[in-house]
Length: 145
Image 1 (spheres, rainbow, N blue to C red):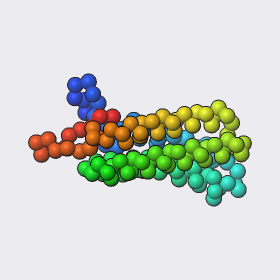
Image 2 (image 1 turned 90 degrees about the vertical axis):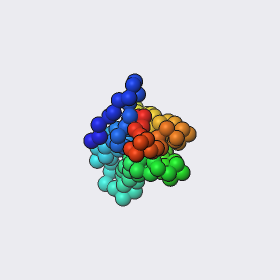
Image 3 (image 1 turned 60 degrees about the horizontal axis):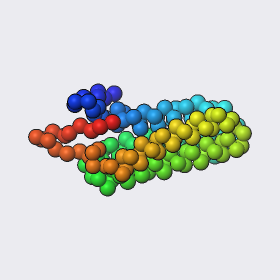
Image 4 (image 1 turned 180 degrees about the vertical axis):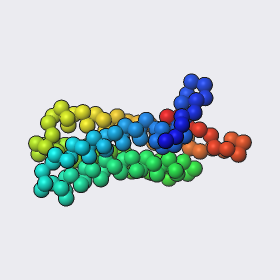
């Protein structure tokens, strides 16, 4: 796991694992994994697989975006992919609720978690420059969380 570097009062992420948005999304994907263990067997190859896949894709796309920070458009594109996967996860959560596999409070908790994730991703997408790699005296500059 990366170590957070401090410069003044700001925290800088050294790896994608240091990003708050990654931590929130990863936690959500793990909670969805546990939650879906209780879904009916007939949903195994449809709803269960879909919601697990989309929730995991959120974090995978964040990690990929992190490695593409040298290229603004590629970075933003991967963050957009992450945002769409988070929204897809919300859709599968709604199906889970409407089918009676989760109760309303669980649905609302997960929906809020993914709204928070989407909000953080949108902020990164609309302000990508502060996340991009820039060379400073031959070394890469750190980035805010």
